[in-house]
Image (cartoon, rainbow, N blue to C red; front, side):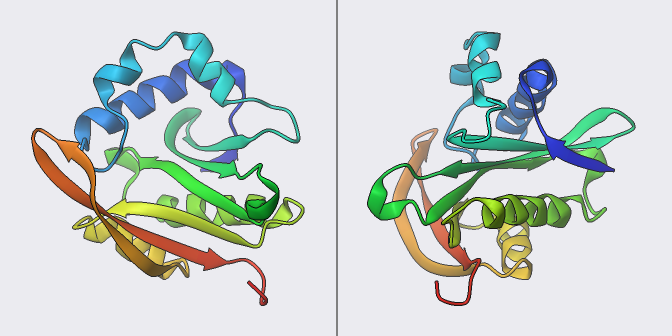
Length: 172
């Protein structure tokens, strides 16, 4: 298993993986498969901006040259919140689950966040009731700091999001 930063050339595989994620787990993502499926490939390529100071990065986990998982990391640009980064779009394909890949992806995201100058903490949200994801994040050192009620609506049902964070440095 290899984990690396995705580049624009990976956009077709990344798009396919994430559309699978949105279809299989609509309650886990704020984006829907239908709204993302209509976006042009150029939109997906732009998400994979290879520049060193990009506003976000997406890491991909490959098994036998096939994209098996992904996780994104966005960086705050505003002066007062540049010390924060956000983990987003975490997904591991069913065939690669229970292999430690999720933990390795989260650790790779944390390593990239720590390498970015000034970033002191990483935040994320997980849909309330997604026990497997929440347990993974807790095992990786994340703590809950709040719950957002009615964070998203799915088929007329409102779902809450659990907000979690993890310090990258002792003073955070």
